[in-house]
Amino acid sequence: MHESILMPLDKSPFSEQGLPYGSRISLGLGIPIQPMQVLHTVSEELADPADGLCKNKVTEGVQDEAMDYLNSVERRTPGSDVTCETFEGNVISQIIEEAENPLQL
Image 1 (cartoon, rainbow, N blue to C red):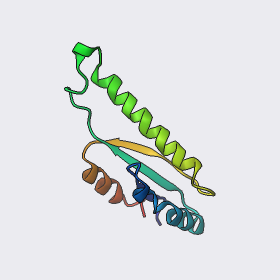
Image 2: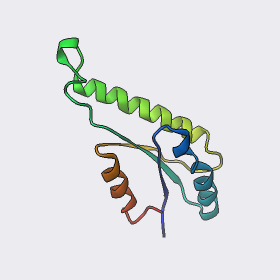
Image 3: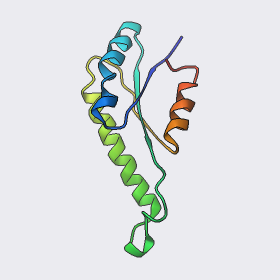
Image 4: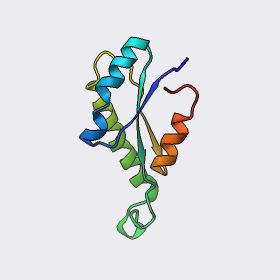
């Protein structure tokens, strides 16, 4: 049996169009929705130590922003058990890896 419904999101209205359907399936099957967002790895050039930025702090900021977005999705998804996650790396590879998890729908 599947344990959750994977919902990859990228902050676009298009990606959020599946949320009502995922919510209804979630309620019907009694399983949670797992919204996910894949973040690109922060490059060294974007986290220039000369400007006082370090890669870890920039990465943390990007992850915090992504979780804020996913938490807003959770608040807008009525009646569902929602578990949000962020991942870092190649978008396609991360989505495929999560989708191939045998516990996902």
